[in-house]
Image (tube, rainbow, N blue to C red; front, top):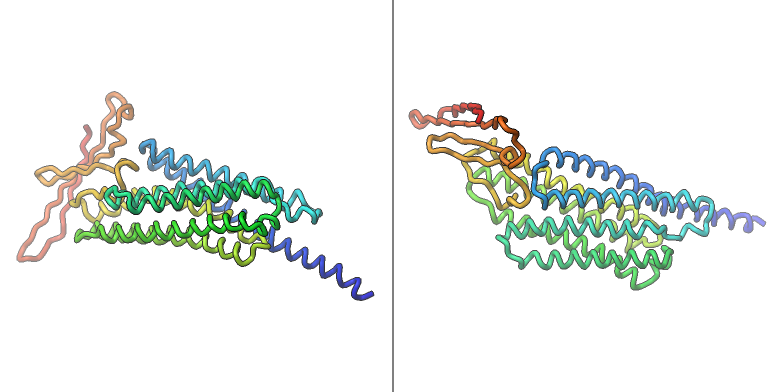
Length: 352
């Protein structure tokens, strides 16, 4: 009699633990993804305010990433609703894969491909427009996108987590996609750091900006790579629960934030460099002209430096009779008995 009463309790406890591990992990991952999506929206607003006159190529990249992130958040919300609310009390539906999980996986791969292609383009610029390194990176990123497309189709077709995990083909394809995501991140981070360090010069301000970019590259690459590796480990070790899926919801947000933060940091890095030295030439290797409109700095023969924003000079941006504000700065250095006196700086505002 005691054994017959204990067995249902044990089964109920096992079901409760599985629900906590499966849908609790999905809920936590979804909430974290929504928080990171808010950061993406904030980064998008900052970009629109700082780079409103940037060229269409960069704008289209940012808008596409932002829209894909919004769609991903919508599919994650539907997946959480269909996984937690709809089958509440019906234990037979705990193993079913909601239809929105597959598109969420596909959108993650699309955002990953866009961001990795952007950083591959930066390697292309740093490598002086040679394709020896860029082609393998883009090819592997594209294979990862195809693997995610196959995984999405199989999720929609099978509609069962157990069948998806036990099927050798689908399990291998999903593993391949996660592994390629981590491998491409490692390749991008390694090559970017290598070519940035190779571009170091004896100019102090240029060395400072290269060190800053190297640190940013390592941080961005390590965060996205760590998320992909953590998802891959949970998928390989614990495929019977949904912890891997909760982590997978977060990957797309990390990649989107990585791209937008990199683009929004350009003004900060440029201004920091110009505040240290205005005598150096611009550094087109890091921020090519195709991705922005950096302020133009020109120096006259008398030692005056002029800083003009090209956005103000663009046709259609100025009304008739409107004046342009130009800052003219002259620096004078004096040496007396080989002791350097403090630099005197004079700034004049001229209206043209």
